[in-house]
Amino acid sequence: MSAARVSPEPAAIGSPTLHVGVFDSGVGGLSVLRALRRHLPGARLSYLADSAHAPYGERDAAFVAERSRAMTSVLVERGAQLVVVACNTATALAIDGLREAHPSLPFVGVEPGIKPALAATRVGRVGVMATSATLSSERFRRLLQAQAALHPSVDVALQPCPGLARALEQGPAGMAQVAELAQRYARPLREARVDVVVLGCTHYPFAAAEIAAALGPDVTLLDTAVAVAQQAARLAANLEPLAITDASTTLGTTGDPQALADIARAWLDFPFDVPPLRIDT
Ligand code: DGL
Image 1 (tube, helix red, strand yellow):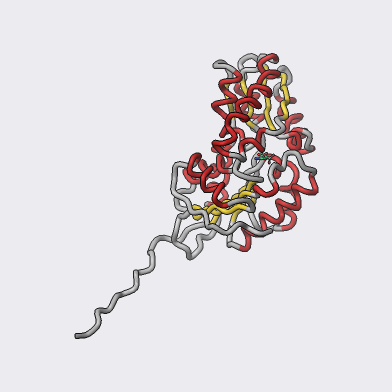
Image 2 (cartoon, helix red, strand yellow):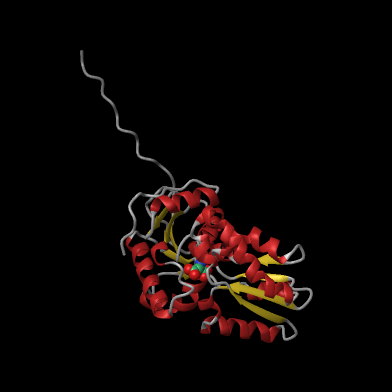
């Protein structure tokens, strides 16, 4: 009797796709990844959380620039053709240096949605919640100045939120502290009677319910995840697809992969892989 031959599984066949890299100081950029997955349904997405070094928002510019370079190098080594800096703080402090270091690699950054907020306010008062590093950056100062010049009658209240990104890094376990910090940072904005609040850190959409509850029902929250994903899709349309065929989503971290997987399971509604090895850089 001859032995049965078992044919190997045929290789997965699909159309060539693009490879988009995404990084944040930690899990906050998952709010941008959600929008990217919807706007680039056929792309391979590689996400890096620098959770061992989060939060960036309470560090100096040299540290954030150095970590952003390290994250970008890992994404480039993995074959990313476009990099989304899914972090307002890294965009404010590091994206110019990244563009200089990688002149042929397209980058998309994230900035607080000042422009839509100033256009949306009905009472002429807007709040911005972001990290201390973003709010005190030169890039943010220029953005605010340019937009304020177009809407001279609108007042803008800036609210740094130290500790909020760090609490969100704990995932569901940190939500009691998130609610407490949301109350603390919403109070000055309530007193300023703003009707629009910009979530100027990619972590904060995961605290949107707590922030909305603390601000009250008449305040609209804005973040820029969809606009960023649309911009990435526009740039991706000019790239040459690679000879890879999967539209997978892979998440890596310099912190604990199991913790990242647990948080991503709670926050993402599409399939993803989290390889068990932490990224050592
Ligand atoms: N998620 C980041 C941002 O958008 C930074 C939070 C942090 O690491 O402090 O600014």
